[in-house]
Image (tube, rainbow, N blue to C red; front, side):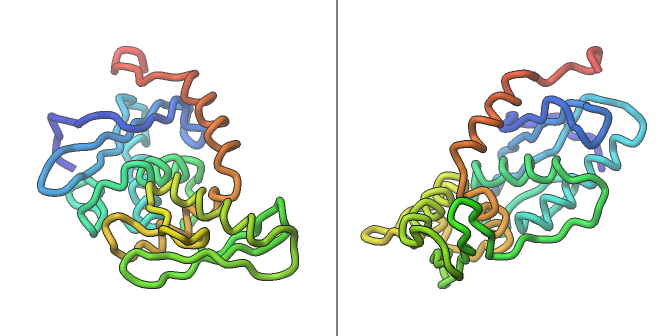
Amino acid sequence: MGAIKDIGRRIELIPMDSQFHEITIGLYRLEGERPSFLVHTYSQIEGVESRLAFLRKAMIELAGLVEEDGLLSFPCCHEHHAAVRRAFLEAAKISDEQVVSRPLTTLDKKSGLTMRVSGLGNGLYEVTTEGEGKSPERRIKVVANGLAKLGEMHLVDGRDDQVEYPCKQVHDALTGLLLVRAPNVRALVREEEMVASRGMLAAPSQQ
């Protein structure tokens, strides 16, 4: 990858990468014809370029991003600010194992229900449940709200079970990724706020 002088504005941070020598890695947004994102670290430790390449590959697989000249973007040309940050954080939790996209189903541990999300076209998704469990209607609403928060999706007026991407494009891989965390967003946010408060991106002389 060629040198990039302007690395853009940092939008997310991994203070200590638990999968690679606890280095600090940031996700940066660059301006252009369409929003693009750079995974960057100041660390020069041996193997760091391979780690960054792995993170980009994982984000592509997990969230449906595309890569060009080391920069990531969504095919729909929208930013999806919260969602790309989520993809970055989830990718960083993975070691060098094979990365696979998430299915559009997840087990909701609180209710015992399987939560399923179905694409209805034009960026519209519907949440349903499968199996026996507690409070299916309430859990559907919780998951729909979780998806809306994690992906900055719109809740459909008059519906507790439908959400829509503002770009009105299909994002199955991204939705599957968000669905895993959607049933328990509050706990996730608290956990990551604590982690983020412990670190800040260090300059080259500090790593």
